[in-house]
Length: 272
Image (tube, rainbow, N blue to C red; front, side, top):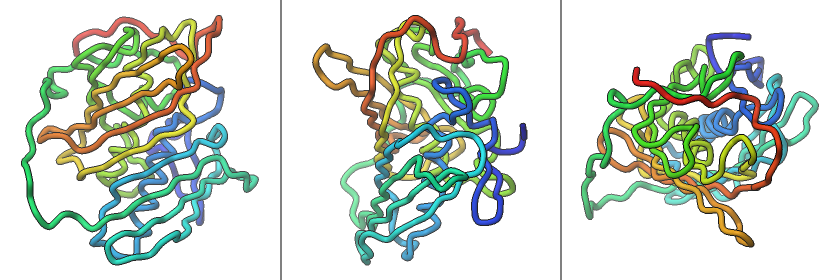
């Protein structure tokens, strides 16, 4: 294991370390880890730096395993005001495991409103992460979480602040979009309407809408899940920084019942 970064560059590709591991499949990454890697790559690939990455839609095709990965970019639509780029993540055997489409738009030149600070406390007043795992994991070792409403162990809506403890890519600066994407896939985990012990609620997709970059290293998710019998389950999160709202995240959910919990133990949180 490396304690330096979630990913390490390896020639033209990357090595995904154990710091990116998730709760659902042994050896598979949490969705936030490759989502952040894709966001980082998309942001560095747009021909016109004046365009803003305002939407990313991810498809989690297969579990993304720790180990060698590559990311390739294809231009769908070039433009001076709107650009579309596709990203593809492949494993060491060349099998596609994740894909995404990034929408870049020229920022608004007029103002019709202003930021309002989040309607909840900052990370300094939050409760420490209540997810406990003996080995390395994205939610505990790569990310720091501070709950200001709810917890992993509680059922119902939740609000938590997130920040990366380590660089996303070793020896490279962390971008604002990296922080948003790393946090954005946690909505179904913190705002679940189902208990972890008897249910799984895995998201095969993720869509991020990004208004602007966060003002510092902290990103908050205000998350809730809707699970209605006979309907598709959805998790929705509003994203915030200390200054105001910065975006939204949507996840479709594959909900199932089982008799065993995920690869972790959830305990009650405690004040830092």
